[in-house]
Length: 180
Ligand code: SF4
Image (tube, rainbow, N blue to C red):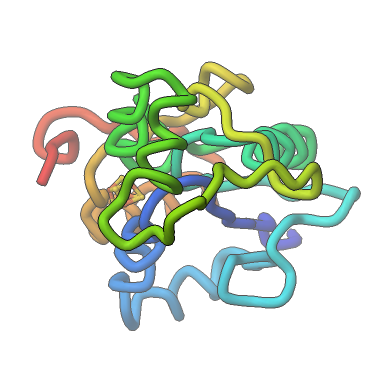
């Protein structure tokens, strides 16, 4: 039987969830025995090709038009989509920006900081991703599995990956469901 295919990618966040995934350490070799890891942010291939994969893990909140595009493409190409970490599950740290209007947040970032040059403007290049209200992944696309934590514990990520690779639904309750 072919191994299930897995892909990972990230949206707005700090990449700490992927660092936690790498902290699985030598057990990554065990995962490679039971799953085919097709795409990750640390390879040239970030997203699964159009033929799709069985499991996709997405870290981070949806923060701009480019994030939204990545989330929708990932959803379309993954049979099971996992929201990895607090930012993906409920918005986390990036969603703190929602306490301010988008205009105020952009002015604070580009115009009103101590280090900005006089006359600085909020960038308006149409090539740049358009910032949006920060949203959890499930507010943009349907999500199948939620793995909270900031970041999620490597043991929990290992458990989730091995369960999904075996075709089972991970049960994140009791001791596995905790925040750091
Ligand atoms: Fe970083 Fe925490 Fe967000 Fe993961 S959940 S991307 S570790 S801030």
